Image (cartoon, rainbow, N blue to C red; front, side, top):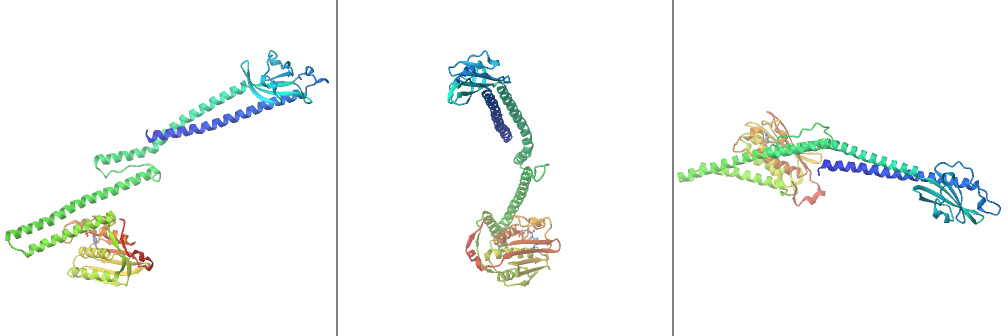
Length: 469
Ligand code: ADP
């Protein structure tokens, strides 16, 4: 059964249930009110008959006289003496010689009962008549219930029709209302099917209703997920193509050099260094991939301990200085004594990645500036270069896995795989810090890292942690 049918049935039965409950309540209430009114009429009639009756001095009933009462057509009266003889009767039932309520003749106190006499439904009040404490007869007043019965019948029919019509109306309104509300879901299903059939992640679900409602939110979330999936899929495809290319090239170079040496039958220095270079590149790629996979699966262990960031920065400076000296000027502009709590090796990896990127992408004659200071409760590390900058369209993506700006995709000895910054981002955020980038094309790029300063109270962090990705 579809959701639409289920909801329609639910609303229709709810409406029916509510109306039925109210109907029963109204029916019972009307019934009680009418019976109360009839009982009042019967009591008043009996009282006025008793008030207007006379008993002879001997106390015999046979001289009781039925007063001239304006009895309504529906009210009947009978007076029975103690010997069970009918003493008086109202004009409408003068032909009736049986009691209106046979059981009521024996009563010692006033009692209401419903009886059926000659097919007529009656409500009868039987009142014992006494002189002193001696019973002299029974007075019975009765009301013909046919009017009440037909009123009840009409009311029942009316309530049943109202309930039925309301249920049908509720079902029709729900069917169309729910159909309209659920129609965006059908679009979601249709698009999802189209995507899986055509393998086309570029499709989006159109929605013309208000964006803030539930359907709008669902479609928005679905479209955002599609966008993310598409980006991820594209970057993975690009990455696969890049990696296969990256793997094939060094392997071809290595194989070529080995073949050459075999043919020459000697160890050629140039071929050997070519092999070494390519092997290094392969090692870097495999290392980056392994690290990325560990970070992804949350299995990259971080060994937290107090780290002197200034010492670490100088260490990185010394290592990179050798690499940069010939092409760019690497300078430390400001350095403060800063201690943080973190994994020294991973933090060094972040710094090496940022500085090597700056050196790598800055053309000959450019500058790379490093600085370390404190800001608020954080250490602030800045790596700034005067290189080509990162195009604005690439900037929001550079921390994504496998992302490389268009210009950097050509292969060179030093070119990377677009993994360095995503690993750096993962490491910094898992230290409770943040990494920001600011870049202007043609002017240069600035990376800024903020890390919480070392806090004596948080020594519990001095242990090995396996963090979630
Ligand atoms: P890669 O190993 O390709 O350098 P990264 O993740 O370290 O990968 O960097 C991602 C991309 O960001 C690079 O391909 C490059 O396009 C861009 N990039 C990073 N640092 C800089 C920089 N200092 N100047 C210009 N572009 C940069």
